[in-house]
Length: 74
Image 1: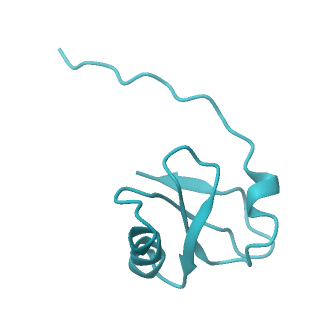
Image 2: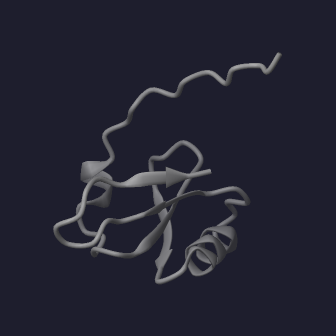
């Protein structure tokens, strides 16, 4: 029998991400209160966050213009 993971509450990150351009990968702090990096690839955004001391950033991809909402990557 598999163990169910607890469901994380939905967080409104719109104010935090308002200046991030479409199609960019973004690295957030674990508490999702700071943008620590961004770039055209996950690796680039993650590297910037690691340079700022965040070893396990939350990575998300901003949707392109006209696409749906942002989805998290764990």
